[in-house]
Image 1: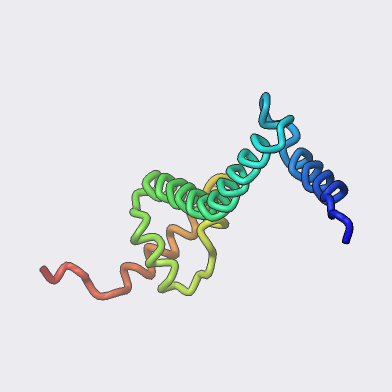
Image 2 (image 1 turned 180 degrees about the vertical axis):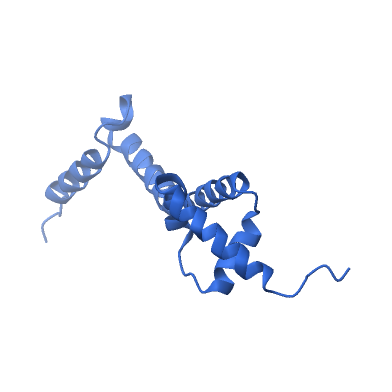
Length: 126
């Protein structure tokens, strides 16, 4: 039985790794073993940060809405609760966009929120 060599498969694997490592600094873009480690590490960070980005964006939207609410004399929690009671179904991304791009509509939303949050029984039973 003839001896099997990995010529074509090994070349293909090396080319794939070096293609993925293109643009990396120094040895990491030229040597197979360094490139392989760099590509694996980059993929781990990319996988993790695709999930982290969602958290970061939600936190950013909440921060923007909070700032817009404070400018109008209300609190974020009361604002969101009032919108929920009013049946306004806007997500935080849209609310933050409205606060930035269309303050007049955001003022109306704050007014709607205040009307509905005041309609609930007083929560100061303590």
